[in-house]
Structure formats: structure tokens, C-alpha cells
Length: 212
Ligand SMILES: Nc1ncnc2c1ncn2[C@@H]1O[C@H](COP(=O)(O)OP(=O)(O)OP(=O)(O)O)[C@@H](O)[C@H]1O
Ligand SMILES: [Mg+2]
Image (cartoon, rainbow, N blue to C red):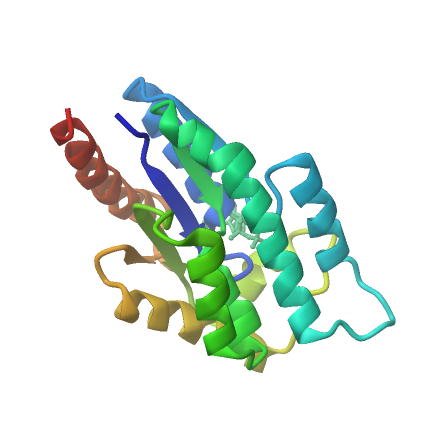
């Protein structure tokens, strides 16, 4: 029985890391084996690529170069970490995955969607997450939540217009693939957010047990 693959998506400060801590507790209370991972990154090589992508630098970063770096990291992550875990029956919880590429490199940076589709089918193919939870918050609220953090990376410094495109981009992903991509209203209290997430986890777990 394969494990379930869940990705968490949403803009900066939307509550992905907080949600993952809740999911971790839920999986432990249900005695479901799991690993937590993130993108870009997840393996030593992929984490090195992450550093390259997120480091602030004077040299302009070419859009195609950034896109290929993200997919290079993803290929490594899928082959060396995600697929082996799922094959063992371990659930995989990833802080960001494929949809972030469509949103950041595609929608927000105006990248070539055909190229994205090509890379997605080549690198990810059928290995998309079983469920993708989009944590949706108004841009200003996400920004307020991020301000508490000390360090900002290259993407945090983008304009409000950029962050609005990011929000819209994730909502479009949910409209395009409603069976896989679920929108969580993350502007609500922690309790209310966690209730929505738990509903999704229970649906997945039922599907999981039903596979036996
Ligand atoms: N539902 C909520 N209500 C109030 N505050 C929240 C809620 N969810 C998260 N927060 C707070 O908002 C801040 C950002 O949350 P978190 O780090 O989980 O977001 P993130 O999506 O992982 O951000 P990043 O993209 O920067 O990694 C944290 O201080 C967290 O405690
Ligand atoms: Mg986070």
C-alpha cells in the first residue's frame, strides 16, 4: 500500500509551516508513518540548489534559469526521497511542490506555461500529490505574518502586486484541478484552519484505508 503525498501551498506567511506541524500531530495520533520535506530542496543536492535560487544577488536571475533549477531540484527530490518513501507506505508532506512553479515561475513572473507543462509532465508525470492544500490569505495578512520573521529572502522582498499574482495563481490552480487542489481559508483562527485541514486528512485517510 503506497503512502499518500500531500503538498502545502500558499504565499509567504500564509501558514504552511504552522499547518505542517498540525498535520504531523494528526499523523502521529493516527500512527501513520510519514516524512516532512520541502521544496525547493528535500535532499542534500536539492537543498544546495535551493540556496542558489533563494540567495539575494546583484546579477539578474534569468527566468528560464530559475525554472530549470527548480525542476532540477524537484527531479532529485522525487527520485531520491519522495518516491522511495511512498513506495514503503510512508506518507510524504511537502512544504511547497509543483504548484509553486506554476504560480511563481509561471503566473507571477510571466513564464512560459507551455514550458512549465512540458517540464511538469517530464519531471513529475503521474507523481503529483494526492492532495494539495492551498492556504489562502489576503496579501496584507500574509505580509503582516511574515514581518515577525527576522530574515527575508529574495521572494519576500517582492512587491504587493507580485504577491497578489501569487495569491490569484494558487486560486487558479485550485480551479484547474479541483479534485487535487483544495483551498483552505487560512485567514481564520488557527482552530478553524486546522478543522478544514483535518477534514481533508480524513478524506485522504479513508481513501488510503479503502485501498487495502
Ligand atoms: N491561522 C493563523 N492565525 C494567526 N496567525 C497565524 C495563523 N497561521 C499562522 N500564523 C502565524 O503566522 C506566521 C507565519 O506562519 P507560517 O510560518 O506557518 O507561514 P508560512 O506559510 O510557512 O510562511 P513562509 O512562506 O514564510 O514559510 C507565524 O508567526 C504563525 O504563527
Ligand atoms: Mg514556512
